Image: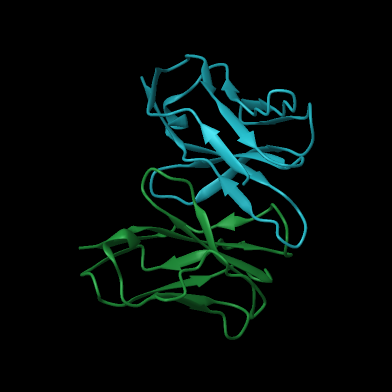
Length: 113
Length: 114
């Protein structure tokens, strides 16, 4: 079945470091891809999304590019801040009558000052 | 605009007890979802409602879990009886229309079964 695989955490970085969180997916078709973020004590928030191959989603300095050839959607940020500390989830979605979000296991990011 | 509301935020019960969670979606959102998020895993859809009807409950363990959305607005998820493996965060989400990737999540209810 369809699935999402994320790199294991936790990831610990110093402030202003470069961030990459790897995400790959398995799917029979061409889903939409997402990154969600979960700050401590809060619900999931959509961070960015891409709906077709070669699309780049971006928000709050984060970027991810939909790579069909490598079935990947890696999350990147050039300079992380302490406030970026959270759990990040990669997800895919197919539309249609059976559409629902399928999430990866999440990657916890801790940014130290 | 108020977000998705859930209560309680935390619940601790003994195994074999019953528990219920409540969710109030964003006003006007016809579709409501319940997800289970076990520690260290991503959320997994349990059930999806469109107004007061069930769209998808294929992942709901129906021997012990039940959910209802009687008036097409708020919803209750119940576990009876609870097992240790039910310890998780239960997330509610809503969307304006069905079959959409644009879902808004509540803060969740953290359940601990002892």
